[in-house]
Structures are given as structure tokens and as C-alpha cells.
Image 1 (cartoon, rainbow, N blue to C red):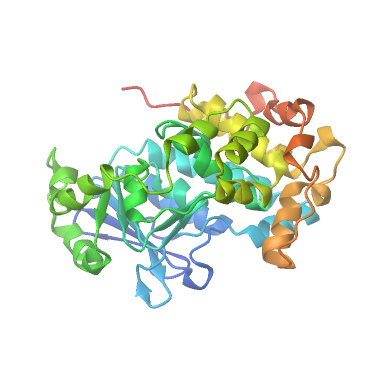
Image 2: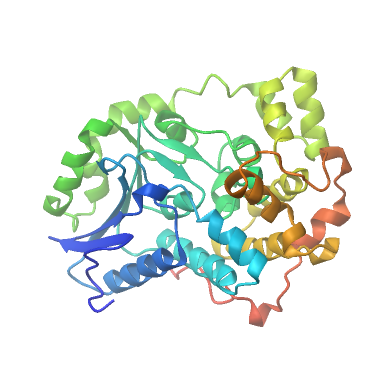
Length: 377
């Protein structure tokens, strides 16, 4: 970019108005799915604004098919993942390394960051949103971490933020890919504010006029939505029951499946049966380990996991034989929705298949995310 403070066109739009840096994801036809170029643009803009005294806050939204809002971000460009994996394209490794760096940057951004999670917020979109200072959801929010459906795991810091949900809700969301509306996202602790989508344009227009230098800037900005937010916080979704929480607290995937069957939770059990048995076990281990990790270490773990997901050498498989490439093929390439998982059933997954996913393929001093660390407070 010639001007680090402005991108007037392309898949990422960025400009400074007043004291606010405004970012719009502008790939509406793809539900703003992230490309490597978009990750790089976002990183460059955020780093520049972090050093720009004019910018006191940053806000991010997505472009919908009918104008601003309506969709935030559907995740990473999984068709690119499939093509790059089969071709041995090094850009695939670059994508995940740089995306996870961007996630870390947002979580530790020194200025208030507001994200408007209207419409689809999945996968990589959650990575952009969950580190924000103020996460705004609406009645149109469709939030999920559906990665196990494509033979992957909830990455972009998913282990970190899902493990911080109450009880076993994080396990449930990460394993089943359950979609949340705005109120449910607030209840789960994955959104801070619930507002009416009809007010989005007016609130966006108000951003440059707000006094972001004030200590209570975020609280005063969202004050109008306190009532709806408090109601959402106090209202558990009808589908989230004590017995479901108990089932997803079981020690392993076999135990979870048995508990679900015994309690008659057929919908959750059916959701699991559609997903990669191997990556369900990896995801469960990821979330459980992440509870005791800081974000930097968790992202390093995810970088290890994603490398093994596309290169399951310990299983004597090529990238083309990985559950990840197979899952993407079935969902987005051939669209037959009939993935051939290996192994095919939860009870066939062994610890010897799962544990090596957590062994880093790099020595610590050569890890692609070796320099990530929490800021000194």
C-alpha cells in the first residue's frame, strides 16, 4: 500500500475518520472469507494505526451483498486451502502463520477495537472478532466454529476463547459446530453487546464523533444496549441443559458419545457423527489443554496442529489423504457432502493417532510463531 492509513478499494477498505480507523471487509460474494492478501492488508493497517496518534480507536465490519453489514466474515478461503495443500504451495503455511499473528495482534491491540458481528461470523471471522475490546452482536448474528465438519479444528485462537466459556459449553461448540444467534453469543461470553441490526448504520456513523480518549469510552458507546445485553446474559438457550453440559464434560470422545446416547441427546450425537472422528478427538484435547495456556502458547499449539492436519505424517498419509483435505473436498469442492473420514468412527480413534498432533514439528527457536508473547503490563 502506498498510503498505510487508507485503502480506498479492494477486499479490505480502510480509512481514518475523525479519531477512528474504520475497516470494512469487502468480499461480499464470498461472505468476506479471508485470503492471504486480506490478512496482510489488515495486519499492515492495524500496525500502522497502532503507531498513529490520530487514531484513538479502530472499528471493523463486513460488507453484505446488499450493502454494509449483513455479513462479517465466513472464515478462511477453504477452496484456497484445498488447492494449496494438493499443490504443496508454501502460501498455505504463510496463511496460517500470518493469520494467527493477526489474531494475536487484535487480542493485544493497545487501542480500543470494536467489531460489528452482524450476519455470518465463523472460523477466521471469529479470529478477527474475539480479541476485540467490544464485540457487538445482533439478532442476525450467525456465529459458529464449524471446523470439525471439514476435518480441521477450531483454530484462530479457538482453543483459547472456547475454553474460557462456562462449563463444557466450549467443548460443545467446538465439537458440534452449533450456530449461535446474537443473544446466545452474549450468553456464551463470545459477544459483549446485543443490539438491533436496524441501528447499525447510525452507530457506525457515530463512531468518528465519539470521545474515544475518555476512560469510559467503550462503556458509554454501548450504554444504549445494556438492557438487551443483560437479558441475553441471564437467558440460557433452551438447547443448553445440565445433562448436555455433563455429557460434554466426559473424559474423552467415546465417553461423550456414550453419555449423549444415554441421555437421549440425539441431535448432538448426530452432529458429531457427521464430523471427522479423528479431528473431534484432536479438538477435545486442544480445548482441554488450552484452559491452562496463555494466548501466545495456545496459538503456537494451533500452528503445530494445523501443520499436522495438512501433513499427517505420523499416520503415514499425504496431504491429499488427510481428513482436512477430504473434508474440504466433500463440502466445498465436489460438494457431495459425503466425506470419507479415516478412521470412520469415534471408537476407532486411538491416543497414538491424536497425541502426535501436539508434538511440534519445529524446535522452539525455529517455530514460526516463536516471538509471540503477551505485552508487559
